[in-house]
Structure formats: C-alpha cells, structure tokens
Length: 297
Image 1 (spheres, rainbow, N blue to C red):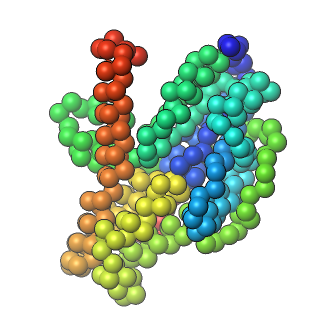
Image 2: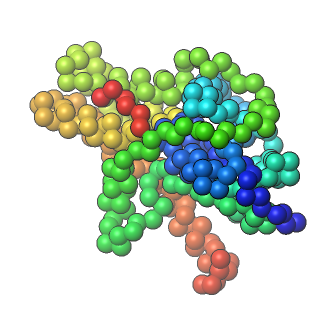
Image 3: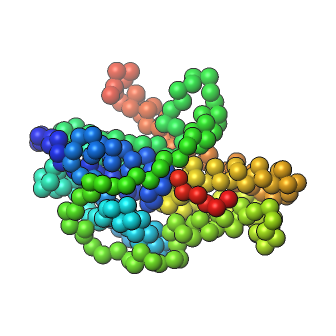
C-alpha cells in the first residue's frame, strides 16, 4: 500500500537508545525539518517488553522520566506507544500524516531496520538514521578506524534545540515521576564526575585510584547503551580530565582515566563489525548490484 506524503505532517524523533536531549543529532534534525518544511515535531518512545531484571527496568523508568522532564523544559511532550514499530508509525501516518522519521543508530544489529526503510519508502516518509557511537564511515580513505573515531568524538556537541513546533497527539501511558533521582542521566553524570574528579578533590582522588577505567566502563556501559549520556560527552569530559591530571602530575589518576578512554570505542567497533557482516550478507544475497551539556569538569 502506498501513501501520499503530507508536507505539513509530523516530523518524528524516535527515542530508542538515545534517551537524552543533549548532543542529539536526530532531535536537532527533526526540529530543523519542521522549521524548514512546516509541520510539528513528535517526540516518541515505543515501549518494548519489560526486561527480566527489575533493576534494569528501574533504570529505564528513571531515564524515561528524566527525558520527559527535559523535553517539557524545551516545549515538547514525550509520547509513548506500545507495539511493533512499523504498526505504530503506520497508525500515526494514517491519523496525522508523517513527513519524516529521525532516529539514532542502536548499539547492536537492528533486524527491523530493513522493514522500516521499506515502509517509509512505500509511505513517502523521509527516513533518516544518525550515528552516535562514531562516524558512519570515514571521509578520509587514509584514516584508520581509530583516527576517524577520535575525530568524530572531538567535534563540537550538538546544542539542545528549543522545540517551537511540538505535536500533541495523545501522550499515551503515564511514565514514572520525572523527579526520580536513582538511575537515568542524573546518576550517570554523578558517577562520571565522581570517577573523573578534580585535581584538588582528595575524596575523588581515592575513587579514581581505587577503580580502574576498565571497571568503570563496565559500570557506565548500561548508561551508554540507553544513551542517557552521549559517547561524545563522556569522551570529551574524560579527555579533558586526563590532560588535567597529567599536567598536575597525578600519574595514577591519569592512567586510570586513560584506560577508560581506551574502552570507549568498543561500541562503535561492534557497530562497524555488524555493518560489515550485513554488507557481506547483502552482497552474497543480491550480488554486486544489490541494493552541550557541561559536566562541570
């Protein structure tokens, strides 16, 4: 079935593993599309089956509550829907018209992506996916993967836009209170601050020296997988702290932060591997012709 695309319909920002408003390429693009083409920005989260781990669910609830609060501060509502993503978008398109759909990449292989791309093509909806764990590809053919990744992380973070044209099509189910402090972005920022510390803070010196960067990365990874912090926020904060510790002669702390920096590219390398596998499978099947937030540091 084919649809007629409305030039004044919804521009959807689909929050998945990017539950923040800071350094958010997809949110910025959706707002720019609404300003350029008309229509309203719809902030959307599609609920999936609850995780088995209750602590994981608590962390997700806190992240969604804080995202809802951040969006309200910028002038938008967080809409929550349940069901298959393609069904959700089809229903929204039928009722309100969808002009464009903006999403960040997820930190794992996404089996639904081809189906959504096919739906968007049939529906006449512009479907845009944005990198967040590293560059989608290197524009410099002579740059190594590590060099391209470092250049990407060093780029300025995206400012959080004001959402001047926000849609309200029925928010959906209620989320947890937005003032919940355990979990979510607030806890992620506090954990990162405590680990990185400052040159003159003896309490945080003890924290950093007691925990290796590799161990802290494992503690931080759930926050990165939900995207409550962007990887670029963490890399820039850690790089700045590492330089401060080196200049201050805090060699143990500098080494611990350096070990964190070495672990941060892992998510991007996994995505790059997934894309390589996908490309190989497609080639085999189709042949060669186949289709800024300050952390206070």
